[in-house]
Image 1 (cartoon, rainbow over the protein chains, first blue to last red):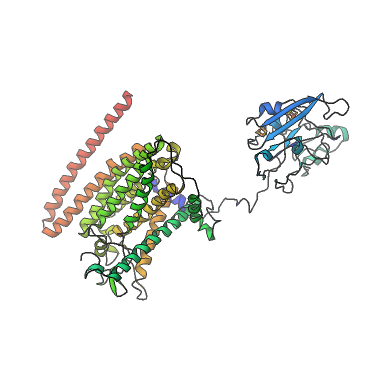
Image 2: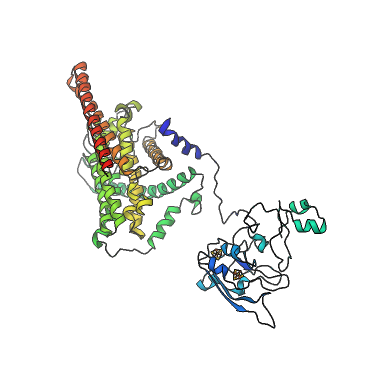
Length: 216
Length: 397
Ligand code: SF4
Ligand code: SF4
């Protein structure tokens, strides 16, 4: 029919399945590396990972991170290094959840949870400070009253959620690239990855982890 | 047969009452229909794009337009500093009022077949099921669609801003171009019906499908009318007036609140009116089979169904066709539709003349063929020359 073929196409669409997800009523499962609200991680011994280097603030395209570093107090250090993040603020009215800050951080201090359903009645609530961002003593993100958490949103929020390989290769099949974290220790590799260290040291079969569904 | 039998023997209070009821019914009907047209369009276009569309306000989202309307009322009514205050305020009303007025001459019911002349009896008075039946009904329609362009034109001009101005200049150029084809397609119908009154046109089509002007005028005028009407309505694929990618919102960029809603209303109302006019001109108006002897009921149902079919077609156009480029728009209008409908107009007039004057078949059509051949070759030569000049201009640039 030449020119009129298009009319057939649009007409047949009337009988096709709809692709819309009616969002507040039905929610799609989130991918494990979903970019949500940030958390500031701590090591297994409770020390903060952030060293106040401001790399995240420098890389942020939305210029929404404000960091001020300070020397660690000698008696009770906050982080294992020389310096720590003294002030740390993220403005969620500007953040585009690109996760460049997560990629830039040398110590995996800043990562993202899977929470995205939060809103503020007040502009100053949109600026998260260290009080809100740092994980609690179990290593879980803190929950604010204006945030709507769902099951699984607070899991696997550590350095694990960065791109799998330091060289950016998605088919990473090598060393686990993330450090231990409060509450969980070092996370195991995800599906399809082998932990060569573990294999060499303990003789565990590489497949054992490779098949693991557990991402906690 | 001139005019509504309601006024034949003077006008008294009952007549005025009937008149007022008719106006009120038509007005409300049009408003409610527009409301549902907006819903219908949004729903249908989402169906054609694998989406769901409005489904929250009311059952199946039916009240979405109502909710939007309420929202518009509470929005701030902004006026740009450079705008001409009076004209800026006036323009939306011109659009809305003409949209209402055109509908007044459309017969929306009444049985025309079998000797009856499309009257119904209300309170013991015979009357037509249309708000008014002026003897120049069709001219009124054309006039209204021309005046509606003023609404758009003045809105763009008075906004004191560049995008609305470009949008409205486009609108007037487009409307002028397509009004010619639209008018001539209407003239074909008028020649066949022998009257300008819309009621007369519907009456002339009564008595079966083959008498509908769609068939007896040979489809071409209808197709030309449909294309020209789409352009007149500024609907896709001819929506250059408000080409979002180029002009923000076109002529109504600077409008907000209820004034914007008026433009919106007028636009969708015009779609309904244009569909109703097409039904009247080419599809026998309220004509259709009548069951169970309910002569007042079925014609209106048929009329509404036919209008609905056209509304569907307009949405279908929008879902299917990409927007034309401006030169393509002008090309289609001036170099294709106008010559085509001109030739058709000549042919139909000749046919009618031959029938009334009993002219010789061979001589008439022979002369027509020669005239057509000469005209067509002149036209094609002209178009070629134009194209060459255009190409040369392009090369020079
Ligand atoms: S996710 Fe992107 S926008 Fe948000 S804080 Fe990090 S770098 Fe900035
Ligand atoms: S979060 Fe990471 S990149 Fe940002 S200041 Fe702390 S250590 Fe540096």
